[in-house]
Length: 106
Image (cartoon, rainbow, N blue to C red; front, side):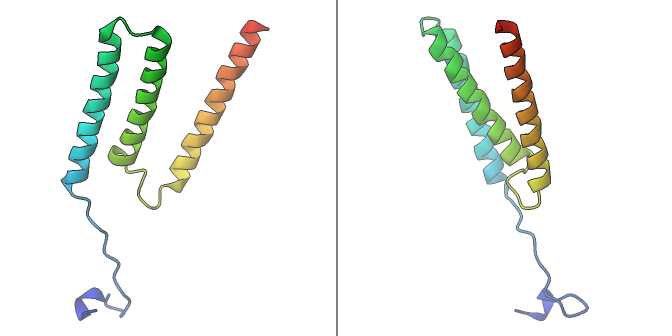
């Protein structure tokens, strides 16, 4: 450790690792690929409807994970509270959908 790694009071400075553009380019390409797969599944036309819906839902979930992880930086340290609040929101929204479906078909 050199003297450049110390604060003025002698404590060790913690450097933040910079994330290069390579990961953002990879995430962008992955997002484009997911979009093209979803578009191709719908544009094919002759594919089973149930399979297409399931494939679109899987592509949407993967797209959300890529967006949150790389563009919203939720994969970094210190983002546990926003992640917990979003998980709570998804849980409440899921319960609302289940309650609405149950109420509709009762």
